[in-house]
Image 1 (cartoon, rainbow, N blue to C red):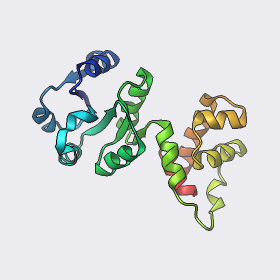
Image 2: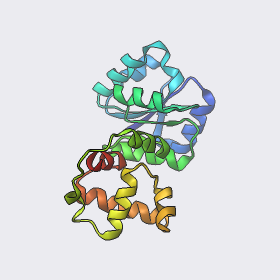
Image 3: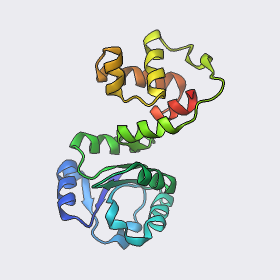
Image 4: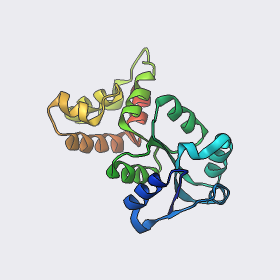
Length: 194
């Protein structure tokens, strides 16, 4: 998949180009961008002008994976953009590894949000009156501990601190949990277990 960049901020474009090196193409004209198909598109939130809903729908319908990046991201905007069809949302100046991971996550068919936003969304999911504990039977003891913390909105770092293990170990456990439960991410885990 091509990686296309669009922004009304030249500094952001330069930063993103440096992150993705020669794997990307800058599209200056919004009308040209809207004609894109089956690409990963990074777009600055302020570049939408007044046609945000229409642009996101058209890009999503053309099987593009849209990562909207914002200098001042917030959970309200995240919810709105995801409901319109964006596949990711985060800080326009986030670190290189987050940008790369966001694109990789979207290419794997998942939605990407900055971990704190994912945690906020998870915390908003109401608890079921009766929880199905049978879902956790095929998990190891440690995986169950990790799963229960993740479903409550903990980040990998917070789970690691709580269980006195590294975030990398938490991530390994999480990947195993997701595979065993046939889900893709923390949000899906929370929806399944809450």
